[in-house]
Amino acid sequence: MKKIIVFAGSIRTESLNKKLALYATKLIKTHDDIDAQFVDLADYDMPIYNGDLEDANGLPEKAGAFKSLLEDCDGFFIASPEYNGFFTPLLKNTLDWATRPHNDDNKNDKEPFKGKIAALAACSPGPLGGLRGLPHLRTYLSGIGTHVIPMQTAVGNAMSNLDDNGVIQDNNLDAMFNAEIEQFIKAVKVL
Image 1 (cartoon, rainbow, N blue to C red):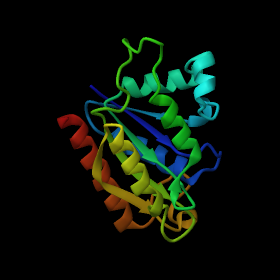
Image 2 (cartoon, rainbow, N blue to C red; image 1 turned 60 degrees about the horizontal axis):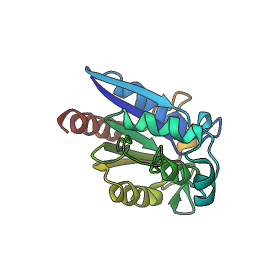
Image 3 (cartoon, rainbow, N blue to C red; image 1 turned 30 degrees about the horizontal axis):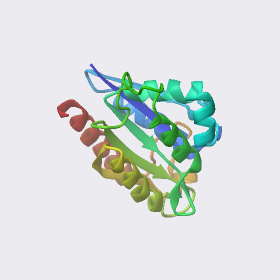
Image 4 (cartoon, rainbow, N blue to C red; image 1 turned 120 degrees about the vertical axis):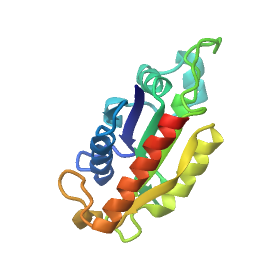
């Protein structure tokens, strides 16, 4: 069985991207031999990365717990808002901490990103749907060894284009999102 972690780059209670991530989790769970788990980053509160803090105290407990989730999965799906044309500081900080070693000798660490498969999406109240932040996230993940599938989805006008369950109301865009999920699942099963 393949294991997939799904999370959003936002911890806001009514986050549109959290709703989209929950919808992605529901779609992923419909596939055989796939275990999908939604992870709320609100449950993994971490300090801003600081090398002095790391030297003094090691990896924070919540960072280690999140890193373990990534180490034990075959792929991950991220729905991230766009902040001024980039992905969120929360997401950057979370991923940065997850790249750090669990212990001083670094011998027992698994690779949380290298060779894993990722899929990306975004949504926003504006017409571009968070599209400008996705290339930066793709570059970041590729730089740490993650295989990011080619398809991505940006849901514009998400206040009216997502229902309360995160289901995309535009049929063509929903079909594109479903096709992205299919490509993601295929890549996770093959690689």
